[in-house]
Structures are given as C-alpha cells and as structure tokens.
Amino acid sequence: MASRRTPAIIIHPSDNVATTLQTIPLGTRIFLKKDGKTIRILVREEIPIGHKFSLSKIEKGERIIKYGETIGLATTRIGIGCHVHIHNLESRRGRGDLKEKRTP
Image (spheres, one colour):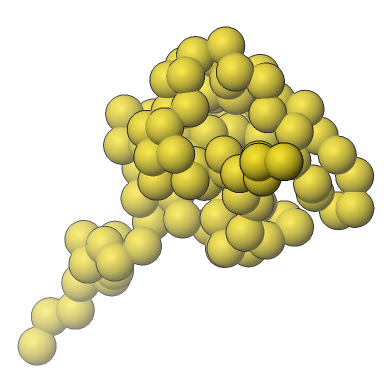
C-alpha cells in the first residue's frame, strides 16, 4: 500500500497559516491536525511548494503567525484556504526601517 504524503504542515499550534510541502492545486481538500483535532481546508488558490495558506479568516491588519511568532501583518482580508505571501502580507521581521532612528 502506497503511503500518502501530507501536502502541508502546521508548524506550531498557534499558527494561523500552514506551509505546503508540495504545490497544492486550487480546489484541493486538505485534512490537517491542529490542537489534537482534524481540520479540513478547501484550498481556494493554487499554493506553490513552500508557500503558506490561511487556516482561518485573517482580517486586514491582523497578525500572520508562523512558528508561533508574528511574521507579518495582513495587508488585506485573507479567506480560509487562500495563499498568504508578499501580495497580502507585510513582513515585520528583519525590517530596519521599522526601528526608531537615533541621531548621534
């Protein structure tokens, strides 16, 4: 019997996104474990390998959480099963322009 590879993973229980392990076509139904429960997600856009998709509705300005950490803010409303990437996420990590500027 062939093994069935999970197409995506949830890295931390508090994450509101999952990361793909393969490209996932539009319309795919995915079953993932979160907090000991199985959740079902209908993928609403093709999600390239290594990219993220939302596990819940994410409102504009809301935190995108991966690794249990905020990695950015949503720049628009993101529906369940939608692609989360630079087109709808503003990174909050490694941004020197967000630090308070000091004068000598």
